[in-house]
Length: 500
Image (cartoon, rainbow, N blue to C red; front, side, top):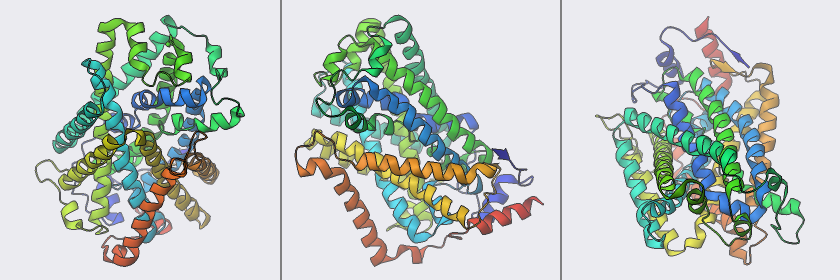
């Protein structure tokens, strides 16, 4: 990897003007650590591990932990590719403008449409999973009504904080980062050192998970435990126009988010498994919510309550970061006149310099999905799987577009570059992504009906179908006034000439 000389004394503004933007919409007030905090609280190893620990153990047993290592390595490759892209295109919205500049408007329309719905559903899933911890904190039975009310409360609270501006977003993200580190690293070390009820050998013992089926099949079925954990680092790029020195800082923030998040998630997962007094019951599916009991047996009643406060802080920060990232994507989409009501969606708050109406949409639609989950709680794991699938497809669309440009002669010209390793890393990242998508599409072995087997694919087809229909009928890409599409090679040459 190599760094190239910075553009010029006027840095960010000159870079954005070269890309066709004025650079005056946002306040550029987010530091490197605030950017890392945003990506980390979006990735949220605490939320990922807490949400799917029981599910992954019941599907694949303790060896499911190795998915954290596998997926972490694969997503680090994707982060390297994203780092080069965002360094050349430090534009708000991330996935959407990257796809447009690497391929074209119609391609970007479909990628952003899929990614937008995946983000909306992800916000919903995280808010829903947080309900159980709020109920445990107050000693309330985690009923459907409680889960609905707490999920809506988390969404509205995040909206209020996001409306307060980038400074408040960064501040709460940093608080969430501290909560995450305490919640996953500090507690993980404590459980590993002092509260082990099981030996390390359990991570090589399926404990009967999957029954008589070959364990390879069973292990592949537990992939969601890692796949759900390792995204969110792209949020560092969604707020690119709000970060100081983004062409250098955002790639580093993405990589640090993956590295710290992976180590944190691994320690947290291992700590809970080794401290679980009833591990066999969890693997057998008899304890669908084991973490509160593990905490109480390890920390006592008071200690577990304190830690639940830490966990809830992490959930709030995660919802906040997701909502912020989704609103920036909506804003970028609407700024280019690619959506119905684009002028309304692209409206900025003059006081706080945030996309106010886009934020409201990112709160309102998840609340409607919460009502759907309330009516049919069994759909929450499938809703989660759809969110992960949509995000992985959007990621790989960017990776594919970057590889296409490389094969046409593109040499990324941002301040951060992989140099001669770029093409090899790009190919490896694409291969990993295709493998991950196949795992997400693969029906669970426990599915009994056609709908159970294919509901995630059906949801994806509905999203893709509606997006294609709107694109072909309304042709929003023709209304777009955005400058540049598929111009990676030309922009790279322009940026290099500006450095001379």
